Length: 375
Image (cartoon, rainbow, N blue to C red; front, side, top):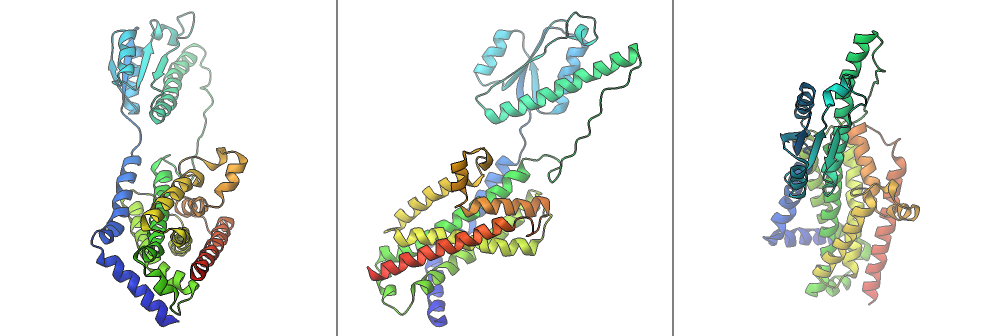
């Protein structure tokens, strides 16, 4: 039995490295993909082109513009009219605009009848930039207006300063979006590459006409599945380790948990994800069919894993469907180990879910291979 499996595994590696296009793509493609995606998404949204219409032309209004520059979210420049504000936002030259009304400084100092209302206009067609501009603008206005409120209180009655709120952020102290996005990207790329590699191995034998030769040999369906898995899981696991090193050392994502635990769980996860590809490969007639079906499964996996959209915001029925994808459970485990330093006692439910899905997927794959033998 071991001799038959070793021969099958050796054949898979020989076929892979004989392909001068596929072998470099499999080895270098995921690393380049993670590098480009992580580099693109790890940078925060800042220096948004911002039009400023200053109708007060006071020291206070100039101070607000300086505060915008110091916050680094906005990159302000002055305009002369509301029409120019409209034209710049319509034409995409500005993603945000501040309108500072006349009497701004007098209102802040309490000399006016009403407190001034500073207007912030954002371009909602770019949702991510609009949300960042709105959140930063609210904080900037509150902070800048609070300075004048404290000065007024201290100069008139010597009253105490406003309530001091203490904010603490756990696990991602700098609120870096990259600490959330990059581990998700690594998990998704590892799942996609593993599934796509496995989706071709049996379909290739069927397309070349050699599957029938394997079926009539003493190799059992279980041995065939194992033999076809070893090459893909070896490459997938190696790529995962290389990408993990890139994430931790190049993009400074913290590694707070147990590295040996992560390596063991990652091996099991990649093995389970390979099952999707083997199942697809056992029913596909050609490699192109296998890749197209695998691509469709991967796209659905993105939606239901929490990578693109939070699972908690989905309808209850859709949340139930999301549990059939190992990637959803893996992202919880992966982020827990990396960012929180959590152990198996925290995410044992997700680990059992991955194991259960692996048993179901591989059992279905072996049944499909037995049907192929009967056919």
